[in-house]
Image (cartoon, rainbow, N blue to C red; front, top):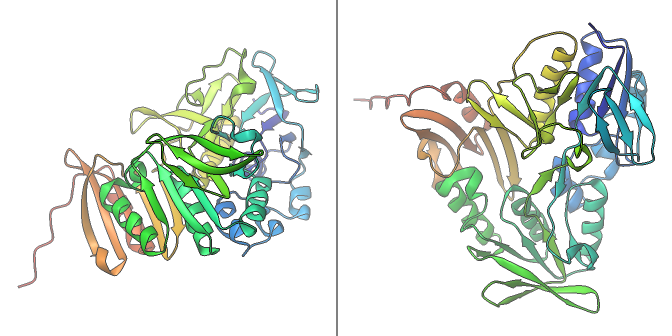
Length: 395
């Protein structure tokens, strides 16, 4: 039965995409978008790059204009985040105490950044998740000389590249020996390390961070577990994020690195999850998966909308992510990972344009394009199949 009211808890990309997909599919009932921020829905990927660098203004990252949002015919409730859920009655309680009941509830509350002990109360220490975070960090970078980025994953690597392009003395610190090693594997991560070094980023990787050094309430450095202190005027903590599921405590729903769902992205009768917060069963991979990227938010939203309206469709995407750092645009399809066998199948690493194929146990698990987006995309159908035989050499 088509629901008369759909409530989406979370008004970022995944939540907005769900609402728009419902309308495109012909849903004419009541639709509510509940957001924790005061900003209307905006795009997050530019925050660590163009917004931080100042090449894009905040208004340009809005996902939709005021007129387009109005045409959606949805009640947009901003600045009042979800604070509790009763799955039995599908009632969401907000931070202000409001109670909203619906026939279907979509959980799209995203992530919360991890922090270092004491960092929240120290001037000069930042995380980057929201638009306000990006603007506050930019303001600090503009009046600073030395920045230390803690965390060598996607976000930390992007912030380090952006801060360096702004002219700061930048150090990237983290426990793994190369940037984005967990996502790219040793070959591509090693090349990314070289790219950062060539552009002047100091890499202090393979060493754990023990804490922060402060003076008069402001950060002065980052202390490694060796006792060495990396001097800093600004510290950015990019050590990952956790699914924003705290508000679901006591709901009885299963929480395990996200809101656990079946292959239809359904956590309980009438309760769905979408985007970074959703941990769903991927039927083709035979495992529970949670993806933190913009593409997944949009693709998963379409499936959730269809299932709310009566479809019975599993969500079985080929994972995808991309990152821009200095002059490299890196796009990865599938699940590359650090334990795969890696082969250069097009281009060459010395020229800065190539495609990598990742394989485990004779099957292709991923492809990566480094400034070769089209070529990598054309090899996406290889994922899941046996590793192709080498093409014969020309006589």
